[in-house]
Structure formats: C-alpha cells, structure tokens
Image (cartoon, rainbow, N blue to C red; front, side):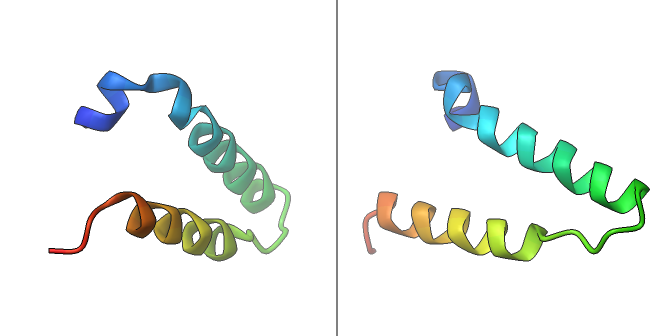
Length: 51
C-alpha cells in the first residue's frame, strides 16, 4: 500500500495487467497472468534488499 501511495504511476502496468486478465477470462481465453506475476515478483525481489 505504501508503495502505491508514494508512486501510483508505477502501478499503472499492474492495473492494465488485471484488466487484460479479466478480458481474457471473459472471452474464454486462458489468461497469461502467471508469466506476468513471475516477472513482477522477480522485480520486487531485486528492489528489496536481502535481510
């Protein structure tokens, strides 16, 4: 939540991904959300220092 409040423009891509997922689902296509999620999780891991 803190990241979204501080940098909402960085999350525009996530909202586009959610909308694409919903559109795929509604049109009977298999959503590709897993690939997008994996890339996003990798990005987060690079941004967060190891503890």
